[in-house]
Image: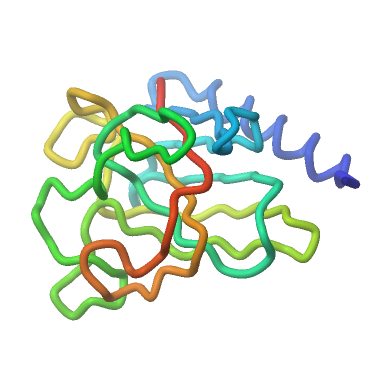
Length: 172
């Protein structure tokens, strides 16, 4: 597997700078596959708009994959069911395109390249790294899950996104 060295170095440097922001809440998640092998990392930074998430992952099939926050910060392999359901403290419906509004676990689909890698950054507006109802640091923790299939962004409870392939426990 060929890795874009410049992209990898840039991601590491930017991730490191993220953690040098003083009192700005931040977090990270080491992403593992069903065999427990590290396949990437996610870095989280609290912003005025929400939580900025930078994800870099490898070893996936090309195409769109659902990616969600799950309600428990556990990644017991091989199926990651220990992570519970989607993070949904406000008890909303599933899906970024749901007319009743998205819940806290909803994130845009992850687009995986032909070489099985993905690198993206987006902002989650329905969660926080600070104290409060939507905090990813609630009792029991939170995890980030990448699913086998595309999230249709409207079907309850999980967008028909399929099996859990990758998991990361979100930690400070």
